[in-house]
Length: 245
Image 1 (cartoon, helix red, strand yellow):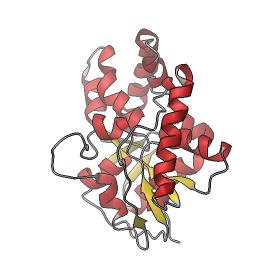
Image 2: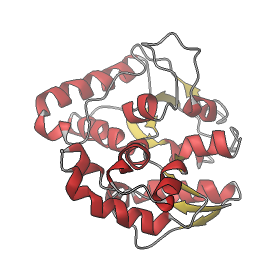
Image 3: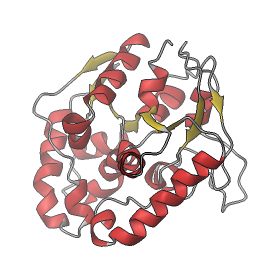
Image 4: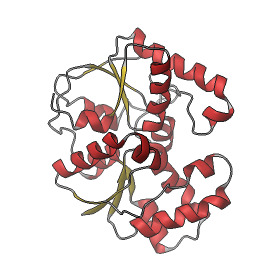
């Protein structure tokens, strides 16, 4: 299996440690990982803002960079969702179809494709899991509280096997953080209030570290935490799965 590592632009620019952790986790699992150096933004910001026509070039570049790999894996549920669901705006060639079908968020790839839940990690902290909307309701990485389905969560499956980690129960465990890409720009006040509510839920339940599979949501929460000097940290789930504390 040859895996193309997709590192979203905001992670590449602002959170390189998340990209490194993702690579190291995959390598620990024996995956043959390649990083196409010509990769750029997947086009999600343009799509979020209603400029899908202008996003077509970015979509085509993405396909050209990743078409030769068996799987495309990235540490961002929202970006992977965009590739899988919104690349329908370009011609559906065999390469495009292949890329869309074989793009996976990191946790989903580890659990569903590799069939692994125990990575031998250790992280002795009280952790709160933020379930992003794209991952939860778009990629179906877990069950939603508004549905009567049996409970499941790929992220929880992985965190449950991290030695020393205590996964804390939240009051509103799958509520939106308010980021929503450009929503945070156009509806700043609502976005901030939603983010503060999510952080307070974690604080109320003695969480020491907030984690998740979509660092755009975590970026939003981290900004509010830092601005308000609150006693809680934010880490991408790849960093925890790569940890040996």
